Length: 373
Image (cartoon, rainbow, N blue to C red; front, side):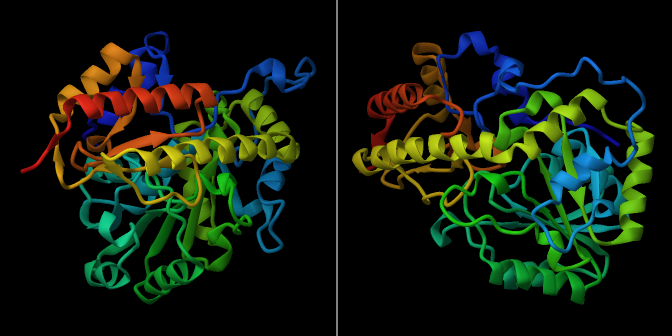
């Protein structure tokens, strides 16, 4: 394995230092919750080795809204990042091939690269609304293809793929004897329509991954999970987990169980907050001339770009935005796109912080954007 640090991690808010940031529009999650807000008593918790698959009550809570999935279809991991690492290192080798949709979460690209796996990238187009081109995916599949990788809701655009699109990808996976990995980290932040079932319900060829990090504002407890109905595959994933971490922190699992068992208490206020901030950012886009976006359907991020009639010194834009205004966004190179793209998070900031951050961004754009002749 040849590891390379990803720009999204090198330049993350926690690396810059939260104290240096006034208006954080780079976060891709809800605001982090405080332990005191959980109303949970851990004094009687025994600090033992946990169940290797994750404590049963937590696995039951993860699949609770499904009539098809069982606790045995769930493997609890140290965050979604570890889940994705387990999937990649279990299924891929230098002799295999991956078909990955881009933009994508960085781990879904960098871990296969570290493995030395052959990879074909199918790039999503802003002009087509970040829709997945099923024909392009089909053409990219080889006899050596082991995995197709997507995110849904999409990171970083907030696009929510239709059931028809997901079923078409499942059909390709089944036809070509490979797996479809769906990173569903934003699933519980579907704030405009009904919650979709985990895609893993639809086929044994689907692997779903999620966590409590984004939706619950609890990235610090490092709890994620893999869901698959393929018994042998889940046993292979368990073998990988046992060699990486053996089990999870029983403290983290207990907190995650509390969050999931009290889901309405945490998710409903989060949805209300997202809807309020979404209205703010939607109105802002309608009133400023420099950026264009594909309106997100779910999650807490969007991925606008500078309008084609403008040019800008992107390095100067992001430097000025941070150093003069204390504001950060996620520049396009985090997602292997031109730096005139940017990911803007609208779930983490308060309403006042979002307004101030957007105002700072517009000020910088007014100052630095040049209208092309």
